[in-house]
Image (cartoon, rainbow, N blue to C red):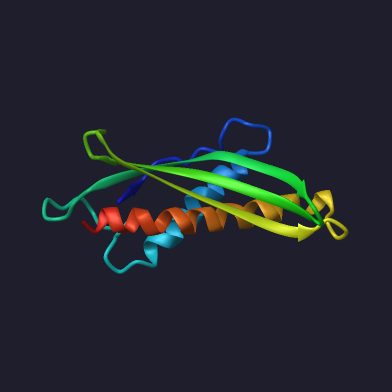
Length: 131
């Protein structure tokens, strides 16, 4: 599997830092799977895929006694010729008590929501890659 540059998205809640984190979290998830390699040189006996990731949405909203940080990601799987084979998505929401929330907590909460969204998408991604 080859990972393309991850994109942070286009809204004000995302940043290039989150794009880098998306790539790091995705690589970590893939590296933990013994049936998938991101390090092997091209081999005609191995299926080769290219994965491109993007943050589709990152938001922060008040909901009752909580402040919720939500993230949606999209992972596109292509073959080595660039043909799209599959698109998988993942989403997650992290809550913190409104009474305890501070704006300085936002980057950490965004990172947690992003990591959990990647974990959710990874389940479907691995199922597709292992077919």
